[in-house]
Length: 286
Length: 334
Ligand SMILES: Nc1ncnc2c1ncn2[C@@H]1O[C@H](COP(=O)(O)OP(=O)(O)OP(=O)(O)O)[C@@H](O)[C@H]1O
Ligand SMILES: [Mg+2]
Image 1 (cartoon, each protein chain N blue to C red):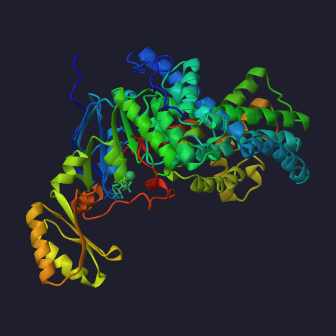
Image 2 (cartoon, chains in turn red, orange):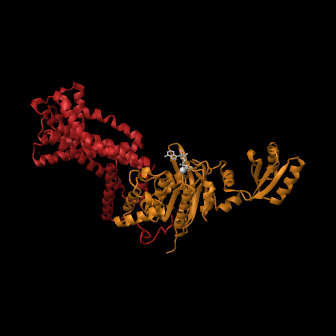
Image 3 (cartoon, rainbow over the protein chains, first blue to last red):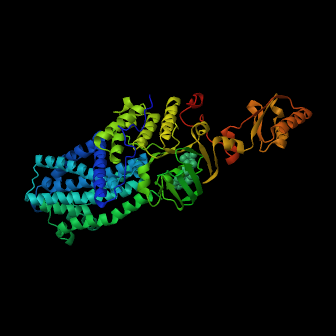
């Protein structure tokens, strides 16, 4: 091992960095940092077979499991096809499950000190978070693509116009963004990957107590209220409407205004958890 | 433009964690282009001091400037000038070594090409060339540490902070770390390092600040510290261990500090100021008391002893530190 001059001019300018001072150069730094961090998160994803599995195979398995195992025993009001009813629910399920990925990734970074290194270099603070967000969105888009393909195979069709279909995808991604903040908040709260695993546990019940798999009309009174209040239900109903899938016929105010609520709920979640996540991040330096 | 004399100036830095007063007013000045060592027992506040100066923590009181920038008001400017090697590794375990250095290089806004060139040069320098494309989670502890150090060298920092840089390193790589730090210092980088290894502090540091219970209790060059605690050290080697308490009592009369006995070695030592008087008094009184002495010797105190006197506790010696039992055997690079 030889010691070379650490500052050989070819390799490194004597002083590499100048902080960006104008708003425009700040923005440029933030955009670059976001992209670099997101790329790194994608490498993580590719490098982890378990995540690839849960991200891609899990949705496919859900289609089989619910579509055929449970599906044969399920009926949809107004005589719709259960698998057509199911797909929007699974779309939202994949989105909701994403919170587990975010929490784990954020807690991993905090635990391994990577967050500390990010904080000790002059990169943009926005970049750290926005990069995480961007990578999570890309993961979810991939998961959705797989799910759409599975859906097409089992007979699901988007009956609405192209614009309506795009709007449905946009609503799903909107829900995902709001969930990123929950994930970052919880990840910074628990700090260790071990504790982060606990976050997965309540996800399934939360996803089940919604209108994703069964219409709330068939649930006992109090459960129905909970299921209808579940922010996930609003997105599911709204996507069903936009994809022109069966099962949108709720009678409550919430389900009649599902499109509105599919925007209001994520906005509300963001309004609560974005400041909380920022607060947690700031708290690291206290 | 003349460079300021001090690269790090801290005045009355305070930091509380809930009820723990981690720092109770740390004053520290590090001259430009020198290596300063923070030496202190576990929990003294060394890491906290470093984390404050690196802008990872906000101070609850006091102020500090690093490379001419205030750590609280100009944190981002400070970050452009520093490199940090934390007590725990801070690289990404999923990425490969090269991907890690590329990542941080690009976050320093080097171009893709430049980041790659820099990454390869650093990997080579730290003996990680062959492991460059392996995931960091398959690295050994020492390799991770070196990758960490390489990552902090990316931007050729003005000020380098190292929190226990050589913990867990084998002797060869330990020397390599020291040499790399030295080569940076030769080019004008200022270094603040914390360590438990006294030989490291002795060899590497121009100045040492001894930290105890959240305060700097003394500063000076290793030589100054050694002479400050009372000139020389007397070692009495006895023929029989049972005479140790008696010998210690006699030694206490001429010593400037509490005598320390090592029963296994049949030895008792203490610092003295007036060496000649001490020796003649000792010889006389030991003989009168009938203590059989095999050897009396005078020597400069070790940094270990300095440390013990100043803080009342012994720092971890290299042997006790995790995972490396050979470190002391290896010589120190010239
Ligand atoms: N994040 C934290 N939360 C609460 N207490 C803390 C935190 N970090 C440090 N402390 C406390 O502050 C004091 C100083 O800790 P610090 O880590 O600075 O010591 P140190 O000198 O680096 O010790 P070591 O030699 O073991 O690394 C200790 O009492 C420690 O318990
Ligand atoms: Mg420490």
